[in-house]
Image 1 (cartoon, rainbow, N blue to C red):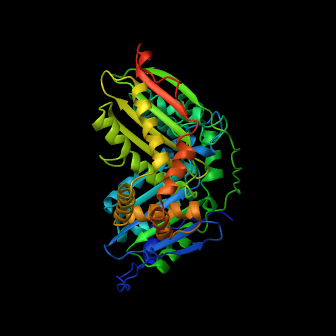
Image 2: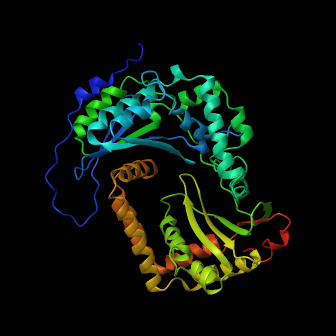
Length: 457
């Protein structure tokens, strides 16, 4: 039976937007209540009612990211994100943007290693339009896809790569760190942006095959959060999406375990100051040690009085800046520290200072005041994000994909509150006083400024 398309006028008639509900009794537990439904074609719908302001956010996750790409076709997930804005059968380019803008709404998309996200936010009376547009490009994108669109967006993505990697000071780190930290063939061993050669190789047939495999309702979750009624949203979603056929089942074998190796690299670039990158193999998101590593990140560089910021930037005046990150992903994770030297400072001095602080933190742990500050700062940022309905929608989608529970907010908060001094000592000793990748990016002709292999843990 041919796929039937539902016009937006029918969706407008199908939806009756909600009136505010009575305020719920206060609770000591943080709750973001949701309803979860799955259509026969496999599409999962999560609805969260928030009537504090008359706005809504729709957030669609397709469970495909750069980690699903194959060697020779890197950068494809991000390229396809761009193509999703090039028009569909009933909303030809540039109607997607124009229709939303005329309704007072905005939209965007992002790609990372594990997923591609598309979202709209605006007044709640734009909800039917948002759902109709998302359904049209999920079900009716391929009839309008042609080589001209692929070529146009390929050049846009190549230009993004030129701006963010090839012509960006220190941008070569993007290409060097991932394959040094992860073994060949690992889903995270190449950058999300991909390579120029692979982007050039992408064909129209590749695009169509990618869409048929990954852009199917059974590989997608849509969150609708804001001033809506769950039952009205369910009716509208069924009407818009139910006739889109299910795609093939997708299996993702777990990557093989590997033993990290100490690696030291030096790269010359058109820069004025040398910069040191340290990267360690860590843990997947929501792993038992993930929260402690998040707190460690704050303890190292989260504030002016954090360990590395205080030591390198203010006390010893070795670095212009220093940043730590805990990049935990679905299948694996890594922890990184980046420090840019002040003029006249070699990277060995910075590496030695970082190693001293890591060894001290592993041996003694943070003070009670440091730990309290880190936990409070993380909790404050966590709660501040909940003010925005589009941030809640994104977080609901993330929790559902990573944990299977959309309303994971309180448990996420609890796991960070529960981090102890002993936890910090343990994770620093186990993950950060351990084999690592060390990359020195130095000005052209100044390799003597690079950090030496001596002293790598």
